[in-house]
Length: 268
Image 1 (tube, one colour):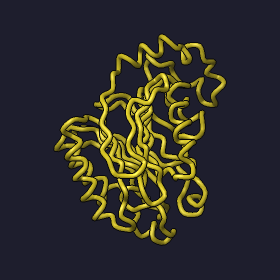
Image 2 (cartoon, rainbow, N blue to C red; image 1 turned 180 degrees about the vertical axis):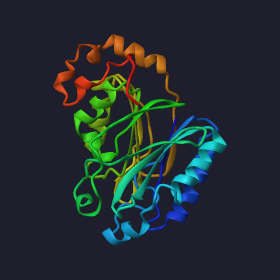
Image 3 (cartoon, rainbow, N blue to C red; image 1 turned 180 degrees about the horizontal axis):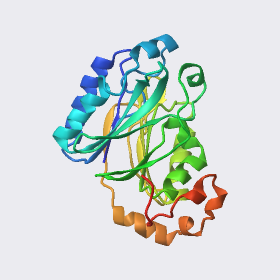
Image 4 (cartoon, rainbow, N blue to C red; image 1 turned 90 degrees about the vertical axis):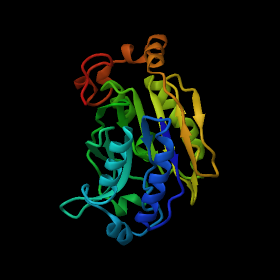
């Protein structure tokens, strides 16, 4: 899998799309799953009016462009974008695009950090698992990773990998270093955090094993394509070694009792 750690050009979707395509075409030589960071097409520090002007319908520019890249390469692409719906509401959203170019789904950020609450609309409290060519994937967008229940629901629904597209700040970098491994170990699941870098973001995109070990980590200073293979057999071994999910009482998690245990027929 590959994470594209970028420094977005503020307020310029076209320029960021071109750079994103360049990085993707490098990454697909080695990766079947490619993850882009949160707000990579726009940058983070913009006004509400600027975000509204930049927001796109699903079938406009960014998502169709990434569908074409996926179809050409055969890679599954996790693509955040600023979405505008038919009611003129805007969301921090992520498209899950399979390797044949099909759009498998859209998730909207449900937990908004700070000033985001004055700019964006809140997405639905729902954390589905998508059965992609690259594995069973759940998406948590940045701040959503800071709450234990969100990743637990993905694990209970049969997730194998949580991807976390982010704009995570330098000031909060210690939380990035703590919470990604904690969520991975708590749920014996792979966690792939893909962050922006520069513009007050801490970088350090990282892949964490189901036992909480850092398997690969990017720079905190520069753009980088972080590539690392994932052993899906190691996931099963980790869950046998540390049987948290087997022993967990699902009724402890709101909504968890409606989900299957990993290995059973899962929701997707």
